[in-house]
Structure formats: C-alpha cells, structure tokens
Length: 565
Image 1: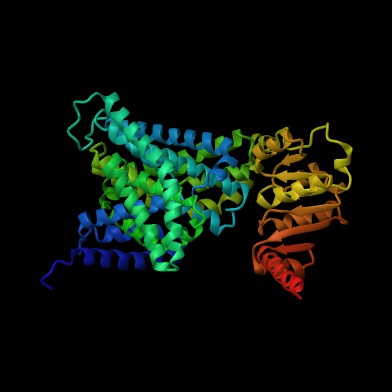
Image 2: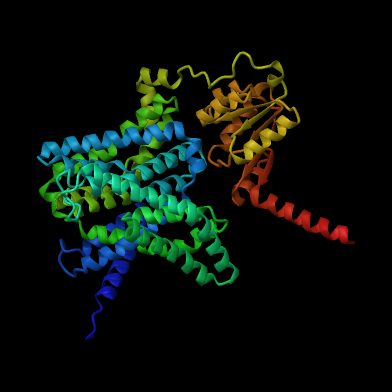
C-alpha cells in the first residue's frame, strides 16, 4: 500500500493483542487490564518485533482519558459520598498522604529530587476505579456497607487526583520541571492564581450554562428517536467539552470530561447516556492502557528489582495498613477494615495519568513511569489473592492476638440501644436490617403507623444520625448474633431484611430463628435464582424487586380497564 496506514496499524495491533492478552488474563482470574498493559509492552519500543507509532497511540490514549473521566463524572454520586463522608473523606486523604510521603522518602533515598518524589508518591497513592469496582461487584459487596465505604473512599481519591492534575502544571517550574510554556518569569502566585481563576470560571460555566444546555440538548436528540444520534450526542459532548475546556480555560482534558459527565448525570437520560457511551468508552480505555504499556521498559524488572519491590511494598503493604488502621480507629469491624485495605491495595488508570503528566512536565525520569507500571501490574495481579485471604487473615489475627480480640469487641455506644429506650420498643417490635432507599421507606411507614421498630445498620454514621432523630438503631453487621441480640430479636415480632445481600441473608435468618423460633421474616432479593431457592426453603416472605414492579404495573393496568368497563 502506498498510502500511510500508521493509524490503522496501531489500532489493529493494539486491539488485536489486547484481546488475546486480556482473554488470557481473565482465564487466569486476573483483571483484563493486566492483559491490556502487556499488549502495550509487546508492541512498544522496549521489546523486539513490531513497534507501533507511540505518537498516535498517545493521542488515542488522550481520547481514552477523556472518556474514562467522563464515565467517572457520569457515575459520581454526591449522595453516595455523603453517606460515608465521615470515614471516606479522612480515610482517603490520610492514606494518600501516607503513600505520597513514603514515595517522597523512597525517591530521596534513590537520589531523586523532591518533584520526582512527589509525582511518584502521588502516582502510588490512588487506586484503580476499574479494578476496585470489578473486585467488589464480583464478590457481591457493592451494595454492602463495606462496598459503599470502598467506593466512597475511591470517589474522594478521584476528586483529589483531579485537583492535583489541575494544579501540578502550575507548580512544575517551582518543583524543578517545565510547564511547557514561556511564562516562567511570572511570579508563582500569579501563575497559580490565574490557573485557579480559569478553573473556577470553567466550573461556574458548566454549572450555570452546561447544567441547562446539556439536558436540553439530550432531550432534543432523544425526541428524534435515533439511537445512533443519541450515542453521538453523548460522545460529542464529552470530547467537545473536554477540548473546549483545554482551549478556552486552559483546563486539562481530564477535568473537562469529568465535569461533562457530572453535568450530564443531572439529566433524566443519564442512565441511557452511560449505557450508550459504554462500548466506545471501553474501547478507547483499552487503547489508553495499551499506550501506557508501550511506555514500560521490562528491563527495570532485571536492572532494578529492589526498586520495583519497594514500590510494590508501598502499594500493597503501606497503603493497605494505613487504610486498615484508619477504618479500625473509626470503630468499624476488622472484616470491614481488611476488605477496604484489599480494595485499595492496587493502582491503575489515575496513576498512569499522573505519571504521564510528570514525564511531560519533566518532573519525573522515564524510569519512574516504568516503576509505576511495574507496581500497577504486580498489585493488580495480586489483588484477587488479597481478597481471597481476608477471612483466613481475620481468623488468624483474632486467634493469636488478644489485643485484636479486645479491639474487635470494644465498647461502642452505637452498638447497643441506650438505656433510655422506651419499653414498648423491646416487645413485639420490628427489627429492620438496613436503612437504605428501601429500608428508609419501610421505617417511615412504621413510624407513621406508630409501630415500634429497631434499625440494625452497618453504617455507624447513619446510626448516629438516626438516634438524633429519636429512631432506635444499633450499629453493626446483622450476621453477627450480638447485633441482633442488641436489637432485642428475642422479643421481636418480625425481622425485615431490607438489604439485598444474598451472601449473608441466610446467616441472619439462622441467627434470628435460633434466638426467636416464632419470629416472622420478610426479605427482599434482586436475583431470580436466589428468590426461588429462598422460597423453596420456606425462610419467610420473599419479595423480588422485578416481580413486585410487574405486579404493581399489572394492577394499575387492570384497574384502569376495570374502571372503563
């Protein structure tokens, strides 16, 4: 062929090898992300054979970053974050600070300057959204308190990282790098002030103008009935806003796309927008990981094995211990602390973006990117093992450590009902497990009818808020007999399990029936198979969400026709 097909060759090689390596990774029970990075290494300049065009790959990766950040913004839920703000906010900030300080200390030991150490530490401090969500979702933890803490923690990390991405170029010159402009003679305060002013102007523009225009635009496109036009509108909005943010406000593509997603979330078409953009977002995300892999030099594993080991230790050991201790200090159970620690003991896409920015600003040497990539590959591959050993590690710690046993069973004012609780709540009451969207509605209905009830909820902060509203609640995992005992299950008339947690429902039922054989049990499920099995075992009254929705819609339809006749 006489014409230039470098773009097609790069995309074909990237997608083809990513498919092969990603498939192998999944078969080995490792996240496909590891396979995508290996595909990039295979077509990168550090390995023999075919070498893809790294310049084109980098531009494709920028689109991947835009769509990744757009997806983060589209799924960003302020309400989910506020539900766990008292643990997620301090937890994420403390953990990122610890990891960053460890990275700075390690870089200083190697003889790197402060700027390189700062970028290295920040790159090691933020976990992968892709890996964490997949890990908790595959284990049925996404709707649990532990899952909500981990996701809320990650949201804070993402927001902090976005802020760092915005501010780092302004500090590049001060840190010994280059911001790519000729404005080095300007005072630092002026540079930072202008940057913050432009970012503030962009955010204000998005919330004042974008919040009105984007939902209206999606509505107009949706009225055409064209699916492909709707998909185009979503993708065009993400990329055009990201580009406009960079061109007009000197804001990074990443921040522009993030706020495009946040604003679009306010539209009633947000779920459809997420579904329609997902395939394209996933495709370009694959190219992003491939392009990152192309920057990795495998020789670092042979030339600097101790440095790689030190980086991995910060990610898996340093970050995890910091997270575990903080969760314990905030009075959450050992199992929750270990699960959160395992969830966050890895790094991913934001680490690559930060390290790449550090390279472009001449803050971090090329070796730093290879070390970050090596740490990501090893920590992501190790992550399933970390989850697998949570239960054995917890049992071993409780068996061999008197301090741990004492800490696990320590007095918690929210783990038992206050002495002032009226006696009517301790006779024939409803024990309501979970106070989320469903539990809250049930609780409100019981309150309106003056039916006594006690809430058992894992979210300690929510229990604290409920008690301020004079609602009786105990903090803890209802699978633990002590929690149901504190809710006075022995005197209860009914146990209502309002949380869709198929892994622990049976354990709650067994405990309740052991303590109170005559208790009536009502529960909800989201899974057809689980519903069938629970009804077959005659555990109680089982409500399946889709089934109940169909019944309500059918009742409404039939009632309408009965009225006409």
